[in-house]
Length: 110
Image 1 (cartoon, rainbow, N blue to C red):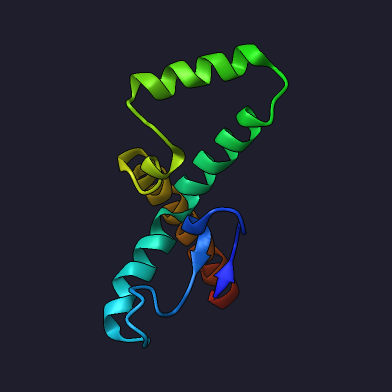
Image 2 (tube, rainbow, N blue to C red):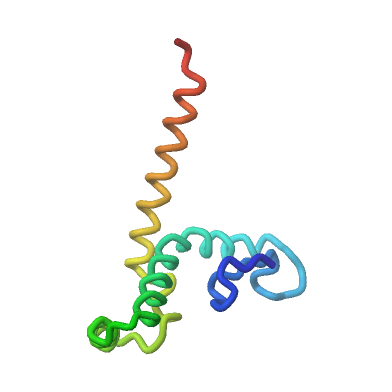
């Protein structure tokens, strides 16, 4: 098991993702889902962490108003949602383009 953030189970990666006792092909969709949503979920985690540990009561007050408006009872409801997916998609697209351009520059014949 790999724990990216030890206090949040969402960021624990294990080969046996469906906990059936063996690493099989049915674990791959779960792992891919976790990896795809990772950038957006990390943004949610750090926004929540820095807001919760802030000494600014006004910031906490407005953050709680937004969470109540969106009917979010805890942070686990945010992980893997639509907005996280959109953000993650663009992060992975941008990262892929950067890797493509680097490889194109390395292997281009000049």
